[in-house]
Image (cartoon, rainbow, N blue to C red):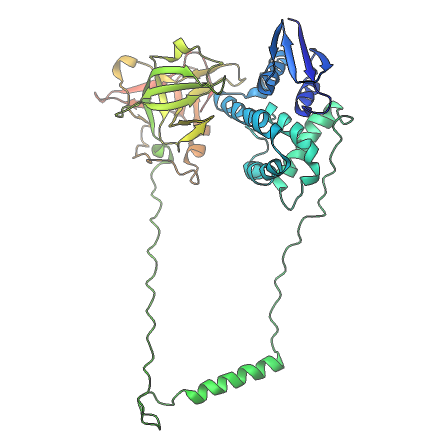
Amino acid sequence: MAATLAIPEKSSHEIRLVYKFLKSNIQFTTGKELSLEVSGEKIDTPNAIVKYLVSQANKPELLGNNAVEQAQVEEWLSFATQGLRNAGKKEIISNIEKKFNEHLSTRTFFVGNHLTIVDIVVFGILHSYTKNLKATTCPNVLRWFDLVQHMVIKANDLTEEFPLFEVNLDDVPEPVVVKEEKKSDKKGDKKEDKKADKKAEKKPADNNKKTEGGDKPKKEKKKAEKKPAAPAPAETDQPVVSRIDIRVGYIKSCKKHEGADSLYVEEIDVGEEEPRTIVSGLVRWYPIEQMENRYVLVLCNLKPASMRGIKSFGMVLCATAPDGSAVELLGPVDTSKVKPGDRVFIEGQEGEPEKVLNPKKKYWETVQPELKTNDDLIAHYGDKPLLIKTASGEAIQCKVATVKNGGIK
């Protein structure tokens, strides 16, 4: 398949970096406009060009190892190629010091625990703004930038086009030293003593007696006693997994997201008056006809999140193969015995789920690493199977098609 990539000489540095990093064998030229021509068809959007280069390099992990990562990569990549690369200097600096610095405060990379194409593209855009990377204003971005420049630039001998940025730690602010108050200040002490003496002269010796002028002494106002604040409600000993609201869902309809090639928008019945809108990064793994009219498991009490302009009110659960080669939807073992809205539980760890999971409590982050499939394709939490509570009282297990020992998320 003949392909030619044209990159402007003085712009599109992030595309040039992606091309160099992937050691792409696609023909390269310098052109007036960014474009990729494949078998006579022209591609001129940076997002599509980047993904094509990755696909030809056969490095799918750069686009995410599972459905969740792939959706996040798609979202960040669109933001970088559509918004950030065309933004003015002030807006880019604002993103560096606020959006990016906050996002990277608890992360090593932009998505997941590994390098993705997002890191490379954002690095390529920010490389022209190294003067604005300071430990005082964006320490997390600075740390990330230094890591990526060693992994991507230095490790691949690209320093001639992308010179390494010397990280300067000299501008880290010194810790504030609290000075102790001086024990004595003669002048100050004398002034304070005089003020105290005057107050003592004005104050009557005995509040129960009349003053010399015959006036009744003023009654001192009693300060209202502050009532102690009510203690915060104690955290119950309810099992953490029981706080997670996983239900049987039935996908009534599914369509492609208009603003993201890798995302589906589903309408899923989870036993409520109206079906929920849920966005999933499963385009790569399932055609639409395999998404519609099927039973799935839905995490229902996540805080709603916007996915490329569409608010998603939950997450369908999938198992990912250990090597990332497959992502499969979870579902009931026997669909004839369940209905939308039936809850999933763990035997011996039942409880009432939270209405909405508090992100600060990190309940889902605590539970998720213990969710997996076993050799028999059955979904487990630790060593116990996930069970569906049916109207008849029978407990139904959950399974996937082929993924053994896969993590569930």
